[in-house]
Image: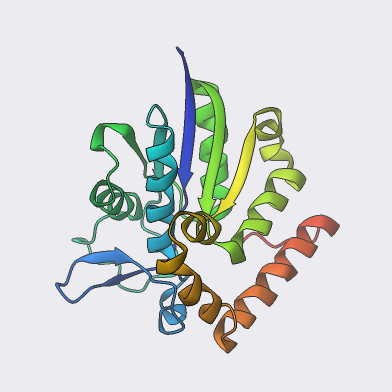
Length: 208
């Protein structure tokens, strides 16, 4: 076991798409990108880079294998973790400070991999970076799923990329984020997430 204590910044993947240069990238926080899987993935990478800049001794974990809601699963497509890593490096995180976790595809699986990592490393704390609409369900999983309860013994925080970016650069982000969260498309996402949280609390959550 590695005896050096590590602060972990854990970046969960969202949807992906091809940009104008035909490179695979994470989704933007736009109504249009709600049709491409979970929106706002690019914000997660950018927010993680902000956190890393404040604590550069941290290890950034980029999660994701092939994903589960993307129909463009070509053999040539990089893993979700590889896409996140490229975005993190572009945002200023050194490649050697990024650990690719390429086993998991869903939120529950990302969390299970953090459980495994906590057994392999001496972890000081974990900060999970996701989107605002998703953060409550992540926290509820940690609280209510028995396989994940060991994470509760660690200093673990679930943060929203939106909050981090607005605090860091309000002029760049506040208007865009507010506009997205008043759109009709995101209302459906939020309602689905609320249902997931409630089902976790009452023990009826369905693992697909």
